[in-house]
Amino acid sequence: MTKIKEIPKIERPREKFLEKGPEVLSKSDLLAILIGSGIKGKNVRQLSEQIIKKYNKDFLNIKVNDLTEISGIGNAKALQIVSAISLVKRFYDEKNNNEIIVSSLNDVLTLNYDLRNKKKEYLVCLYLNPANKLIKKEIISVGLLDKSLFHSREVFQPAFKYNSSKIILVHNHPTGDSNPSNKDLEIVKKVAYTGHMAGIPVIDFIIIAKNDNYSFYNYLRKDNLNIDYVASTDQLSIFDLLELEEPKYDVKITKSKKIYFHKYKTDNNHFKLQNRRYLGNKFKLLGFIEDIVEARCGEVNSFCDIFAGTGVVGERFNKPEIKIISNDFLYFNYLCLKTFIGTSSYNEVSIKKKLIILMT
View 1 (cartoon, rainbow, N blue to C red):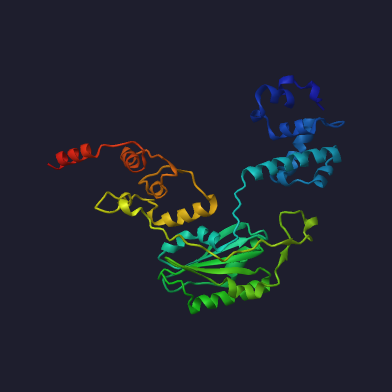
View 2: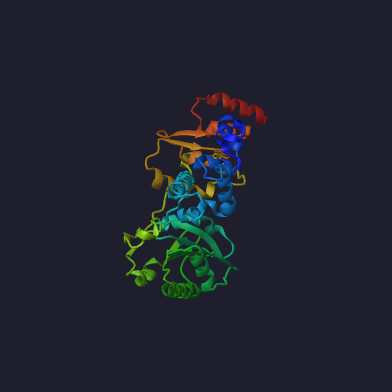
């Protein structure tokens, strides 16, 4: 057996790391640095190679008991390795935390705003954990204007797959009428019964139309009155018996009644920003965007419209008390943004003279 001291210094894991950085080291070399030392008859590099070879595909889920089965790895070294993995996973999860909490009808409508303009009927399911965190959003079926094929198993099979504890169903009416049909009521009864039998309650069934929505929350709530406390999936299994208060789902919603544009800017045949209809123009979403900003940001002192395009979003928030920051690559857009949102002064008489020259 070659001892680690007999290996040239530049090839030893620690020295190699210090000299060239971690990128040039193999997984077994990095693990060797973490373990520190080998055992009689086996140097640290050989020991780490054995671990990587045995648990390579499932290394991030390795347990202390798995490591102690390897000769030369005691509790202390096993704890070192597992703790290091857990620490890295914890930091990674915190850095990449994109949790979406669904606690109200507003949250559901935000996640499914695109359904308002669909020409076909969609049935969408939101799969939630006990803390109302969105696990997965899936399209269950896409039908014609007056028909949507559906079976309960299509809803609840993914629920078991994702270990979901509750679901919310969302359905659109392309006709523009949000009132439930007999077909809708039939679906609600079917999924509510299946959810009750499966232990996965249906919190809400929402119908979205062009300018309105309908919620079956109160209808479904009758069957879910006994579900007041649940175990948190964020705890280890040893804590699963702890009962934590379930996050409340709020069915109330407020709508913005404001006009899309300041009236004085659209009178007298003035140039209208919204007439420049680029692909991706947000004109139809302005009221929705303002609702979200008001709900999440409160009082706004400055508003940044990145890649503004036509500029309709920045124009919506263009008020004396709000600083607007807006940009775009196209020079034509830049001129429009500077004209409508800029603060520089202008000479109206001079502009009229130039327009007369251009028209003649």
